Every structure is written in C-alpha cells, then in structure tokens.
Image: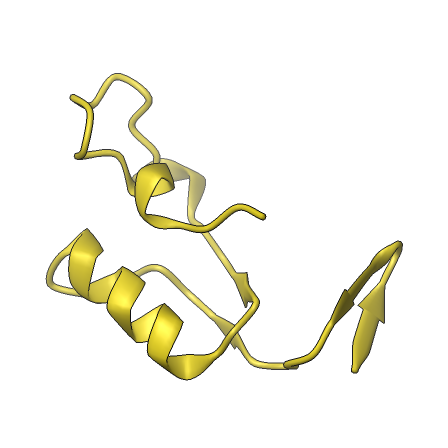
Length: 62
C-alpha cells in the first residue's frame, strides 16, 4: 500500500495519459494495468470539447 496525504492506494503504478491513439484505448490500458493514479498534462484538457471528446471523461476521478 501507498499513502499520500489522506488517500491510500493499493498500487504504486502511476501512468500518464499521453501517447495513446485514442482516449478509449487509454482508458482500456489504464483499467487493464490496475493503476489507481494517472498523470494528466493540463494542455490536453479541452473544457470546450463536445461531450464524449474531453479527456477528463475517460478518466475515473474517484
């Protein structure tokens, strides 16, 4: 286990959100890896993107 502030993680694996051919592939890779934490480049976040095309929608933020 790994504890940061008040959050405890079962996995120490941290993955990024770059270099995937699509957001759907990225999500599937993250799920398959078992990671509980991902890094996200702010420049990749487009809050004005149409529904279903924003990277934040493909990341489990819980």
